[in-house]
Amino acid sequence: MLNGQAIIATRPFRSPHHTISDAGLVGGGTVPKPGEVSLAHNGVLFLDELPEFRRNVLEVMRQPLEDGSITLSRASGSINYPANFMLVASTNPCACGFLTDPQKECTCTPLQIQRYRSKVSGPLLDRIDIQVEVPGLRYQELASKDAGDSSNVIRQRVNAARSIQLQRFDKTKLHANAQMGTREIKRHCAVKEDAERLLETAINKLGLSARAYSRVLKVGRTIADLAGAENIEASHIAEAIQYRSLDRQM
Ligand SMILES: [Zn+2]
Figure (cartoon, rainbow, N blue to C red):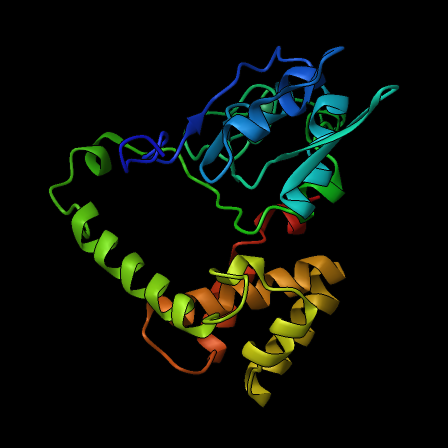
């Protein structure tokens, strides 16, 4: 605190280049310096073109993604840095970028597509709550006047959902649905029979992992909060399942 003001008053946004080393990303050096995951603490870490990052660099992110902190071990001892960030990442569908394009044809072979996708491991993808496919837009769509909700309206909706979550986790160390563990999921993410059946089908048909399953429940809880609904309905679960699009393709 400086004159009653926090030194960092806005959430950080970090966007390292894909050539970054694992030490640069999670921290390192003889005298361990914090890496991008710690510099993004309580903010956003954006990784553009995720498959372009070296795989070992991406894999070291798994611990901080799970724990919200990173431990760096040295001969002289180990040091723990906070690393509670929101990971946002983008990727093309394939190396040439046109696999899902309705207009242009993809020139990749199936092997090339598989190789491109395998650069991001299943366990890392599992830890990404929301996966959305963004189709290429045609000119008419880009120029459309139908803009949807303004950022201001969306902000109000998000703030309302966040205050529901603050109340939900009152007197606990948590403050958002994403932080729920097994116990909290049991307590706050009960679903009715129709939603349960939907989940069961999704798990059997899409082969979702146990981790993905709990993520669907947590995202479903957030979708219900955004809608101001007390219970998680089947429609909320259906929407949450849609956000596992990469699980379905891998
Ligand atoms: Zn392609």
